[in-house]
Image (tube, rainbow, N blue to C red):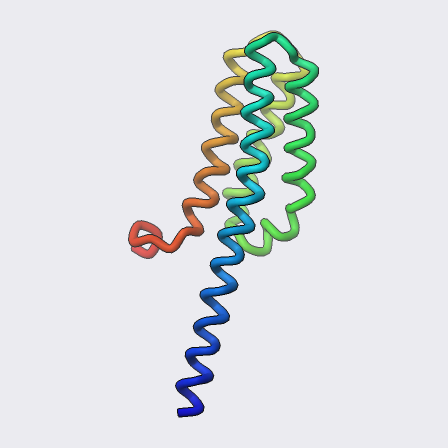
Length: 127
């Protein structure tokens, strides 16, 4: 009986830890997504400086989470988001092509969405 209780307690701790991880990752990526969506709107209105500031702020928030992200996620996924951020910032520095920025921004948003989706316990992720 003692083994069963220990097993159940361990399983409960794992489920709680996984749930906390998914919640935290969702919270962080949602905050980044809001900033990036605001940056996209700023570019559409021709306000490149605001868009650059918002994207830079999102990048810094992403960078500040790097230890946690590298500990819990696949490195290729993290590198993909980081590369997309750098691409978007480079486009914003040129301040010429809103269409290219929109595509780069959409790429970041989609990759952030995929990060959370990959961590959710679903049949698709198990198989």
